[in-house]
Structures are given as C-alpha cells and as structure tokens.
Amino acid sequence: MIDYNARYATGYMEGFTDLYEAARLVAVREVLADRTLWPTPPGLIMDFACGQGRYFPFLKEAFPAARILGVDISFVGVQKARLQFPDERYTVGMGEALPLANGAIDLIFSIETLEHVQDARATIDEWARVLKPGGQILFTTPCANRFSLEWILMALSGGFQPSADGYGRFRRDEPGHLRRLSTRHVAGLFADAGLEVTRSRFRTHGFTTIAHDLIRPRSRRLAYRVALLDWRLLRRLPNGASMVVIGRKPL
Image: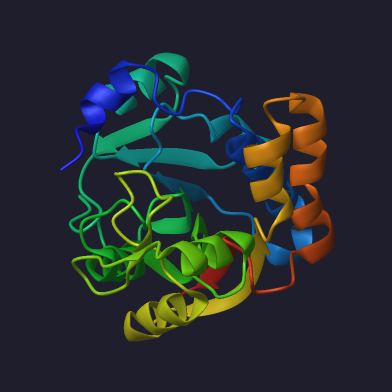
C-alpha cells in the first residue's frame, strides 16, 4: 500500500507544473465556471482527497460563498492544507468509510482519486450516502475507454495489466493507480449506488500523450499548447485516456 503521508511530506501534488496536471486544471476550471451545470450554488463542498488543498482557490473562484470540507487519507496532506487555508474544515478518513453524516454535502469534488482508493464501489456508495438529494458530483479519473493513443500503445505492447478488483490498469499508470475505469464501469457503479451520470467529457485522446512524450523535452510552452487541443477540440469524443464526469443524486 502506498504511504501517502510520505508522499505529501516530500511535495506530492503541490502544484500544476506537470503537463498532465496543467492541462487538467484548464478543463476543471472551465467546467466549474459553466453556470449551466450548477443550477444551485453549493453551500458545502467536500473536496475528497484534497491533499494540501491545491484546488481550493479554484473552488472558491467558482463558488465564493461555499464552505469547503477537505477530506484526505493523509494527515500530512491535511495539515498542509490547514496551514494554507485555515478557514476551511478538514477531516482525515478513508473513502470507504467517510466520517460524515448522511446527506451532509451539496457537491462532491474529487480529482484523480478513484484510481487510488482501495475499493471504488464502497467509495462511490459513501459518496451517495453523504450527498444530499439533488446534490452533485464532479470528479476526474484516468479512463480505460478504447482507442485513445495511450490505449493503442498499451494494446500494441501488451500493456494491459490485471487489477485485484477486475477492472484492469495500464502499464503506464503509476504504482498508486490500482485500476483504470471506463465510462461503462462508472455508469454501473453510479447506478448501483443510486446516483446518475449527467455529463461525461474526455481528455488525453492523443495530443497530450504526444506533447508529454515527444514535445515537452524540447519546449514546455509548445507542449502545453498541444496538450490542450484534446480538450479544446475532442472533449465530446469518448476515446480519451482521462474523463471528467458530473453526476447527481436524484431528488
């Protein structure tokens, strides 16, 4: 099991200098800024796997009146978040057993987390429990849908690996990634938990992979511009290696 306290103690996920992180931030900020997606501004947002709170400023940018509850398995990450953002609330806990009351949360926000948790099904069940009826979810996670450039590279090189829960993973995935879900997997997990997927968008179809693997060593600025083409041009196509999903708990 990965020691996330040790990771956060040495600067894990502190900023957005990595190409994948920078491109993801653009997508997440645009989704948060789309007022048509959030008919009722949330009062309480749970940033699930908040780490040191690096997305807090962007949540506040989108929803200035909201309160944020930061939840993370790492007490080191939570301590760092508390030092930077002392006015927010925090709790340390596992996704499979959140220390929160039923129906307490208006919006669950979770960036690149479902691939890390020990039990994705139990985590989504907990999301459903703590979310208010009518509450919403915004999360991102690596995507196993077919025919992204990453998927093709794995297919050609025998890079599909098993996972303990049967979903599978890519050889390119870092050790903390325990699985890679498809949109079909997510839809099934949400339906089983009594949740709905209301919108799915996609990134990392091919431009981001090319930018990261081939262009970035020569020009970081050009790599960033190329990486954004996936989101700018292809976000509706499901063959992305990363997904941005919005869901809700029915009234």
